[in-house]
Amino acid sequence: MSTSKEKKQGWTTASEVEFIEGMAQRREAITLLSGYLEGMKMRVDFGHIDPNIALRVARERLAAHLHRRAA
Image 1 (spheres, rainbow, N blue to C red):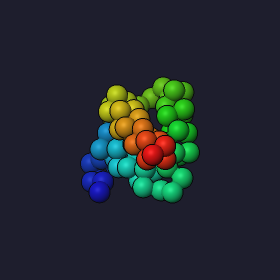
Image 2 (image 1 turned 45 degrees about the horizontal axis):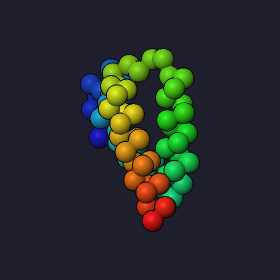
Image 3 (image 1 turned 90 degrees about the vertical axis):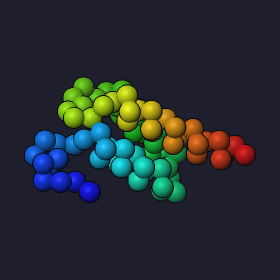
């Protein structure tokens, strides 16, 4: 849950990971995570987000879904 301090500072790495985890729980997770990763290529301002962590989490969740689908 976001604190008032986070709201003043903007989106954080923790909130971005929470957002990614939410996408990973959806039925259309592969489409959502793929779109997220494509969008990250164009993103220039990450604010308080560590893009390396966000990308790693998104890639891991996508890989897990693709692995399950291939099994």
